[in-house]
Structures are given as C-alpha cells and as structure tokens.
Amino acid sequence: MSIGVLIAIALIFINFKNTNLIYGVGGSLIQLSLFSVLAYFGFFVLILGTVIFILLGMGAKPVYVVNK
Image 1 (cartoon, rainbow, N blue to C red):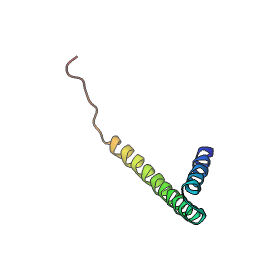
Image 2: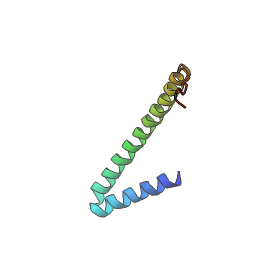
Image 3: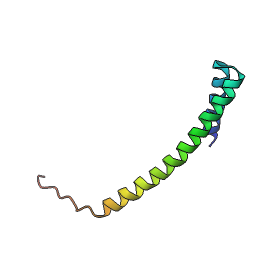
C-alpha cells in the first residue's frame, strides 16, 4: 500500500511540475479516480479468471508419458 501512495504522490508532483495549478489538480484527480476504478475492476476480473481456471482444471484428464 505504501508503494501505491508513493506512486500517487509522484504522479501528482509530475502533473504539477509539467503543467500549471488548474491542470495539475484536474489531471491528477481524473487520473487517480480512473486508476482506482480500473484497479477494482481488475481485481474482480482476476478473481473470476482464477475461479474459471480452477474449475476448468478439475475436469482435465491425466497426461501419461509414452516415450521414456
């Protein structure tokens, strides 16, 4: 979590450094809100993919080595 906070602080600092106050605040708010929403969606997609992978793996047949 501390790495995420450091990245957010760096993002805000870079936005202020490259633009003025109005665009820096607006751009930072938009970027941080989009990143948080996408992180939540990505978490649910990760959980869904893991569940699907486990369920599909249960029905797999064992593999035998023929040529030793």
